[in-house]
Amino acid sequence: MGRGTLTTPCTTQSTGTRTLTARRPGVPDGTLITVNNNGAFFTAFSNGQTLPAVGGHYNPGTPAAQAAILLHELGHSLMPMGFQDDNGNQTAVNSDDSLVAKDCGKLINTIK
Image 1: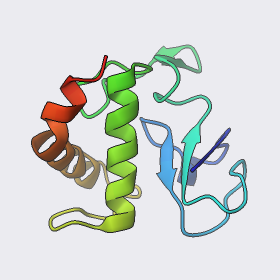
Image 2 (image 1 turned 60 degrees about the vertical axis):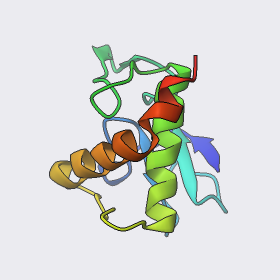
Image 3 (image 1 turned 90 degrees about the horizontal axis):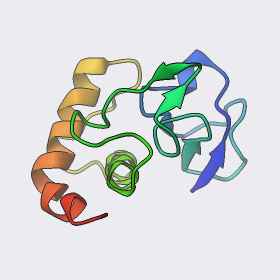
Image 4 (image 1 turned 180 degrees about the horizontal axis):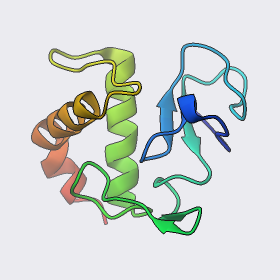
């Protein structure tokens, strides 16, 4: 796992994370999951705008949001049943977020 400032549209999502299979600008070499320095993992605001709730449930920049983001991205590496490649597909992002909330929500909600 790494962190970087993701600078191209193909590497940013509302949560500001990306599961990577290829080198992208702003992403450290050798990382599978990169967290955007300007994304919802670290902050509730980006480019002067409030970021949406992570997975529709967790306030950006909180430990619960961080857990949800990492579990979502880990899901792309493990590809459990029902998980989808969601690059550029908000419907798939929402579906993947729903799986994370359904299967991991109790754990995430214990994180303060």
